[in-house]
Length: 184
Ligand code: HQG
Image 1 (tube, rainbow, N blue to C red):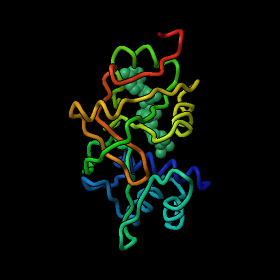
Image 2 (spheres, rainbow, N blue to C red; image 1 turned 180 degrees about the vertical axis):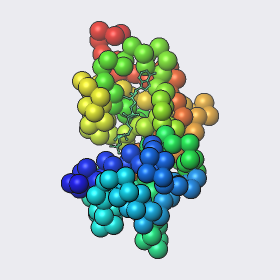
Image 3 (cartoon, helix red, strand yellow; image 1 turned 45 degrees about the horizontal axis):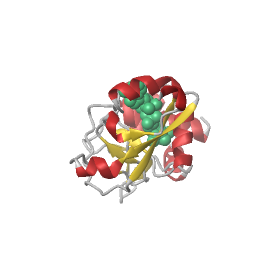
Image 4 (cartoon, helix red, strand yellow; image 1 turned 30 degrees about the vertical axis):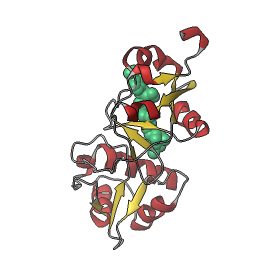
């Protein structure tokens, strides 16, 4: 596997489908690296211990962390598997955060606000450039502004993952702005 393929495969297993390779995660998302590699190889994926460690350091996204003893790995955020319920400290967000999405989702988001979908949180970006990249994964990107200060004032909780991604349960439509002219 290329390093990028290895990182994607590890993301899939640690966030969404540990059972696909018979792997057990604890509630905070940790897996034994040896068990991850053994399970991957048994499932026909040529993953090595070195590739797992490399995935933690590689790329700007910082998707993973290693335990202090170096024996375990976890995804920092983005889980959909019910095996994991990471505990996050509440954090004070900046007044405005950004959410990158695709134009085809805008009508639904305008009606319902941002929903976590299969994940456990809505993901928000600290800056617009990052949000554009996130939105592009789904199609023609559009960046919405989130009134994080207003949400805090109304009691909504925010968390910041170690890699800088901001998380909240949902964003009601009244806290969103920056709609395109045509959808206004
Ligand atoms: C959209 C990547 C219709 C939402 C990134 C998004 C991120 C709605 C899509 C992380 C909606 C969900 C997460 C509603 C939200 N109606 N569509 N009411 N509410 N949506 O992939 O935020 O590479 O689950 O706008 O960097 O795109 O995986 O979430 O377009 O941090 O490490 O539903 O994934 O990181 O898509 O991305 P996703 P996301 P990694």
